Image (tube, rainbow, N blue to C red; front, side, top):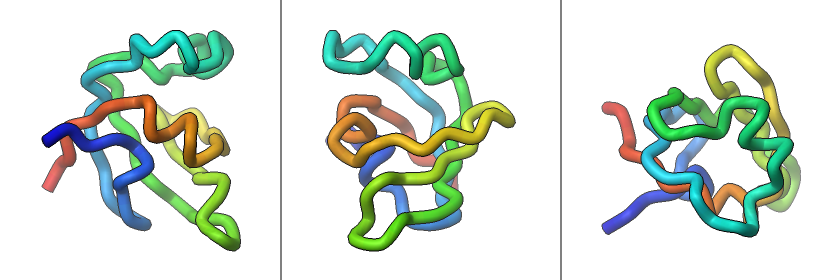
Length: 76
């Protein structure tokens, strides 16, 4: 079963395994949403959208539907 960033709970971490979907904005790839990078869910906005993330020491807020396109392996 593949997990995505959208499946993380607050404080959980993962390693990005796939970000090849054409629906992922190029800007996110440029900011570090690439395979091999570590991601941590820092905060959820009200109604769980958007997600506030730490990706290799870059802080990003992304929509939950976009986060669901980025696959991860959960750490711990």
